[in-house]
Image (tube, rainbow, N blue to C red):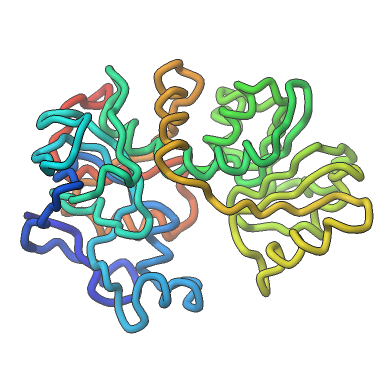
Amino acid sequence: MRAAVCRAYGPPEVVGVEEVPDPVFGADELLIRVTSSTVNRTTSCIRACIPAFAARPMYGFRRPRRPILGTDFAGVVEAVGHDVDGFAIGDRVFGFDDRRLGGHGELLALPVAAGVLPIPDGVPDDTAAAAVEGGYYALGYIERADLASGQRALVHGGGGTIGTTAIQLLVAAGVEVVAVAEEHQRELMADLGAAQVIDYRSEDFTAIGETFDLVFDAVGKTSFHRCRPLLPADGMFMATELGPRLQNIRLSLTTRFGGGPRVHFPIPGKVRPQLKKVAAALEDGSFKPVIDRTFHLDQIVDAYRYVDTESKTGNVILRVGEPLVPSPGD
């Protein structure tokens, strides 16, 4: 099979397309022919080994131990292990696995117990792939926040994969959302349901004189201390990154005491239950992932170069094979 292979840590140019052996699938596994994946902040950080203290123990000290990257995928079942129930050859499936990886190859072997689910009818392959990682992480944070209809949330980094997802899911729950994004994303943020959009380049969002039940840093570019003026005594701050010197983990412990706003740093839950909720949101239309642009497998270096600019809006699709249900305009 063909795959985008990363055999050393470094810039986008360390990744190349190679012919590699087909994966061997076990009795409890599916063999999936991948049609779509994404190039995202996670895969870029793995490729570049950022942060090294976390990436090297998890993915390989000297080089990636799993050289075919790709955390998410959509595709079709090619073969079924004899211990597998509930799936058949030809089923359209999507999923997420940020440990085994492999979404950037034409074939992928994964245990059914991992994050693999049927794609809802009518959902294009690219849309399914784009929904997975953002949906998984955004849901984990939103469920931990447990906001009620009528409460308010500020989403910093509203234009990213997790941010665009969080805005839609919060709005669907009746939460009033203020999005912090770039000026060119203003119309999109409003279309996703944001009641107000702040351009972080021209305005200090921490000085707007308003408070929020939740401040969610969906890109890891701000801090609890900077956002403190936005939080009432019972407010909460969440971020997708550990923060400088792991401060978000430390603050999640120390802010339990003192009666002020708290920092929460939820540990991601099991993938499969969360993906069932993502699939339901895709099916009922409350969530539609934002796709910035699409690259083909042979353009993998260009895809990584673009993601590394940190200017993408929503998701960058990597088209690995021919989709069974194409996106509109294909």
